[in-house]
Image 1 (cartoon, rainbow over the protein chains, first blue to last red):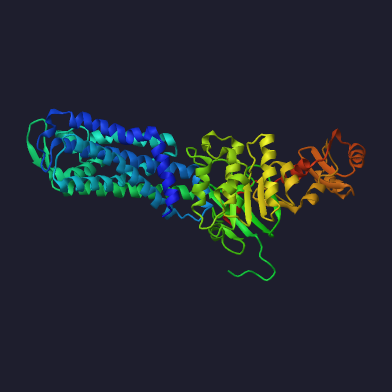
Image 2 (image 1 turned 45 degrees about the vertical axis):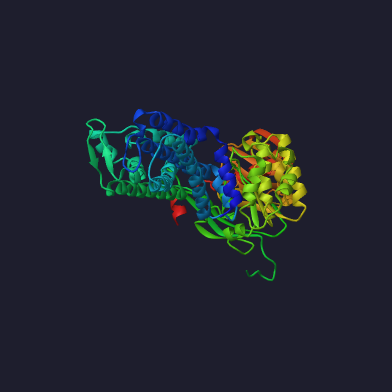
Length: 253
Length: 320
């Protein structure tokens, strides 16, 4: 690990105010509007309340925005010639990937910390275990979406593509039951989209799998294997796509 | 690492071939059998038109790409090892810098990857960037960015410095400034290999010129020797329909003729005595539309690199 290099990479991201707005400020604002400001916010939701449920959702959204952007930019930077510059140094590919991963996790921790802090200051409530475990799952699961960004960057090779990848997260967040509780056919479809498994797992310490259906007021239980399979399958898909795209790039070198 | 008793060769390419798969799927041969040895302390210019194979050859010396056939050694080691050991470094063509960090941050970042390196402020000074150290890379001009790449190349204090068209896209002033900085540094006895298509750069800076065209070395020698191929003048004229091979043989046998080639009906001759050639052409050979141009390194370059049927290679030849 190279502390100077990692530190400078981290400073680059923090200095990018536009990105930081979408990574931290916007999800924090969403939490205040859709969580803390709602009348239902203090209603019970398992091992916590509704405010906490929304807090976890928005922290997850901010965290994947961070990792998607960092993964995508890493791919684009390397293809725009920075990879050649690094090829003239003793730095190995594995070392580079490790440093980018550390930066991605560190940046993902920013919206999580900020939104959880807002949760403490407003009326989010839950068991200590639920607070800690949900934060850890949000952080760890966000790493999968660094691969999602990487795939976009490798496939489309432009900074605009990275912006598109981050933008697409808004759609995936709606489709993944993050912003708005889905029901019926949409909820069934949602279970196949990439953000669904991730956010369901992150909420699991609070909900223990019980899902409140907003349209008819019923409560259903979803077994743990559903979000686990969702996350695993999407992680494998992103990893395979990224590997294939890297190989394709090498062959054309 | 073993080094031969005769002294190590800085760069050695033997039978190096590099083929690419083009996006269309066909094989393209960028480098087609290059043998070359460069001794420590030499300053060598790779001269050739775009697409001649200069960048690909240098990429193989730097370990950025591997040859399809043949071997490349840098100070007796494989290029990637030489890069890791900080023995070879390079100023690459445009691109390859992060735009959103400052000049000093860029140097710090690259410096941190080397276990041992020259001081950050020292290389910034040597590349003449002291007053720009806090400037964002995106706000630097092309010439300033190139000096930054030069600063990065100085970090490992390399024995071999490779410059790939270091002044491409610079204006005349920036080019002169860049070479002034380089001159100051090359006097330290470093081996320098640079690719360029500016002849005056090769002429002013290199002790040896290697001309590359169509993936081959077409000329290799001390700068004076290469330039001497251009002393004299270029004579061109239209020939009456006749046996071209016979006419060429006759022209080439003349004592003052260095080079003679035809393109269609037009013959181009490089000669030390242009008057004698002109007399021969207009008299015995019945030529018309005669033109005489004064010689230069440029014309030597054109004569040598424009050799026909060397540029194009068919797929069968590549696949052999």
